[in-house]
Image (cartoon, rainbow, N blue to C red):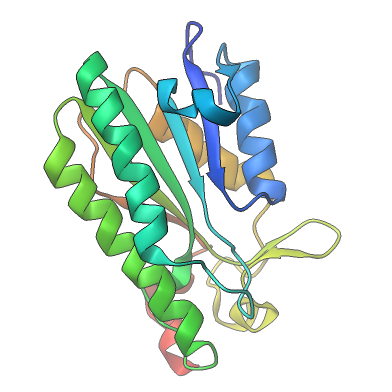
Length: 194
């Protein structure tokens, strides 16, 4: 997927993982420029990355919300911005095997939607809910998800990154408060079996 970011400043907050790194690389390849450290508040696009594998701690939802809110305030003052959360698909459908991880992600999803309500229309805030993604190992999700994924395979890093690019595309001006699941249909209902 190609978009034109025309020099937009991009920054990462949160967990570094293969999907977040690939998303940053794709945003740069599409005309974004990476800013780091204390300059992150100057970002036009902020990627809020959470751990994507069950068994890891998703982080304190209040701290992630506070970081994203500070960025949203700065973006509002400048008149525009995008915040994209990378979450586990368990944010939208809890897994019985991973209750705490599911709850933490659901809390972050609720915070994302709150930010979208508070800072629209100047700042668009969305999330990519990532299911089972494999590279050489499981990058996101749980292997058990694959037995309940209608497309019958794990996703790729590139498929998750395409959803991030959709939310960051300057032509996308009417989508906010949404979680786009890149999960092969896992959340369509099959996930309830475990």
